[in-house]
Image 1 (cartoon, rainbow, N blue to C red):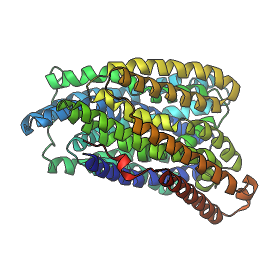
Image 2 (image 1 turned 180 degrees about the horizontal axis):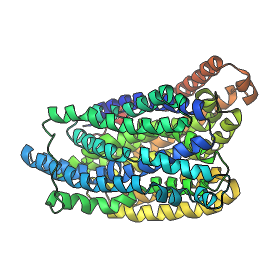
Image 3 (image 1 turned 90 degrees about the vertical axis):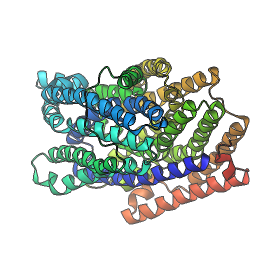
Amino acid sequence: MSKRLLRSGMIVSIMTLVSRVLGLVRDVVVANLMGAGASADVFFFANKIPNFLRRLFAEGAFSQAFVPVLTESHAEGDLDKTRELIAKVSGTLGVIVTLVTVLGVLGSGVITALFGAGWFLDWLNDGPNAGKFELASLMLKITFPYLWFITFVALSGAILNTLGKFAVSSFTPVFLNISIIACATFIAPNLSQPEIGLAIGVFLGGLIQFLFQIPFLIREKVFVRPQWGWHDPGVVKIRTLMIPALFGVSVSQINLLFDTFIASFLATGSISWLYYSDRLLEFPLGLFGIAIATVILPALSRKHVDSESTSFSKTMDWGVRMVLLLGIPAMLGLMVLAKPMLMVLFMRGEFTSSDVHNASLSLLAYASGLLNFMLIKVLAPGYYARQDTKTPVKYGIIAMVTNMVFNAIFASMYGYVGLAMATALSALVNAGLLYRGLHLANVYRLSKETLFFVSKLSIAGVFLVLVLLWFMPSMDIWVSWTLFNRIGILAAMIGLGAAVYLITALLLGVRLHHLKAEM
């Protein structure tokens, strides 16, 4: 089992790596084109709203509810029954998301006023940010249909993942990045408002992703005609699981939207600085945390169906160990190398050294919560695989309220950096509650071996930080170097940190067998 999980995890990670690298290239192109000014703020706002709803209708709550039910149906070996379930789910979901998309396009002004209240109030009072509100409303009309496309992309990906075909869905996001890069290169420069070209890239990226997965569904004989099935037993079961999960699994997204709401009242550039720092955070989170969670949910669902409680716990333990092994150096590396990374990736064109400094502060705050963000991705499937969506909701409510309280405290003191601090702290609360719930329910408890494993990795992490700080050039030297020199030194620093971490871990006794889930 562990070998299969490792192989699946590597496939997802490799495909995700390609996507994340192109995602960084996309952000480099966007930063060069627009920097961190008003236009960038508006584009990131218009892109964030449909992405938030994507978490609700697609990758987040829906997948967590759909995969266990589909796994249960698929385990019975009746392909016709599985195809019928897919038809009813796709038809029902399709009607709902179509209505939401139409309402979103028609009501873009209302949505902008709701989540960009600061801009809306300026528009009402002819303030300096009035133009942001008008532009955001227009761009939202272009980007909102992305929700429709990506919902069916996520549905297709969930189906293929359940069938063990992880590579397709992991590679699909590449097309969104390619589309935005192409539009930023060939369309945006020819427009008076280049951010409109980026919005067109989002729309086209969603369409291409949607079309890409269809041939693979046909090959697996699960491409079916959608049917309305609101009262179908399978659909009823999925929506029963999904409704509470809508809130529970999307707490982090709701927190980010709340951050955007508050940031609309802050200085121009706040949304952009938060975005660029969040993008660097998303790289290891997607590469490791989401990749591990993607392969672990179907595996946990199968263990639950087969009533293998011991195997269920072992699989959970495998996921936690993998997250710790990869998450600790990623978190520490981001915190120590925040400014050099931002310099290498974004400091050109409209993105200035001042933007690097401001974004590095929020990146430092975000990165402090990376390990908890990753653990949430692994611990939450422990509930969803058992078709328990109510418990994470309670924890999600607590985490969201905690985030709001922290926002109120820290935003008034530290501005946009306070928003990132609040998000990181709420992730700590969420991860702690998720583990506590699994522990009390005797579903999963950290083994002594894993605790020793964590202690060894922590010591290795300390050496990683000390070595990087010892060899780190001063910021004045980084600024004086050419881009080529920065890239070379940054690569050397990353390589040095990774080598120190791995060598220290090996000297402390960490071995490959510690990453295997013994049966």
